[in-house]
Image (cartoon, rainbow, N blue to C red; front, side, top):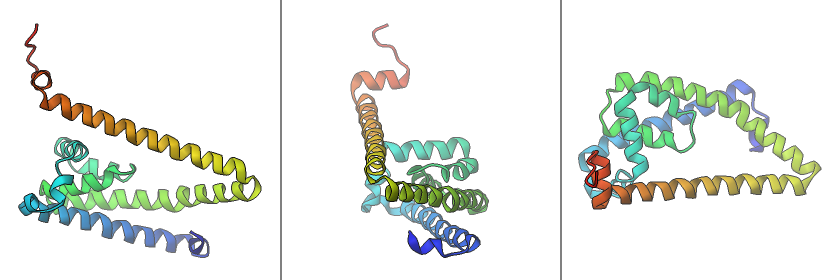
Length: 176
């Protein structure tokens, strides 16, 4: 991260925008290509996950605005861009949403991302123990969140595949 410090803010912002532009477009076009032959690739496993299905459902329901908002999330933006491509969202609708989201992401990352890192680094230089403890706490919170989401996802998938869960999902109340 040290090499960014010497860069003028507009240059760093532009480089970050270029990175997100390339990454988001690549993910979109991979989704479009995978739509035709995903059954024969590793991408097929990703496209069967509950996270991908939720992302696909968001794109179907909300369209282009969900593309823009996805850039304010961590982890979801890749699945959203992949789903937009796999769903063959017209590029003329995808591109403006991706550009707006990319600009937002670039500004957030160039401003708050680097500032947060700088603050932590200064905290570490002054009080290494509390700085490391804070970092460990944040990592534990993130790991706990990921485990909780994965557990919920597995439980939801299991409920949908079990006979009782399928009845609940379809709205049938067999026992009522």
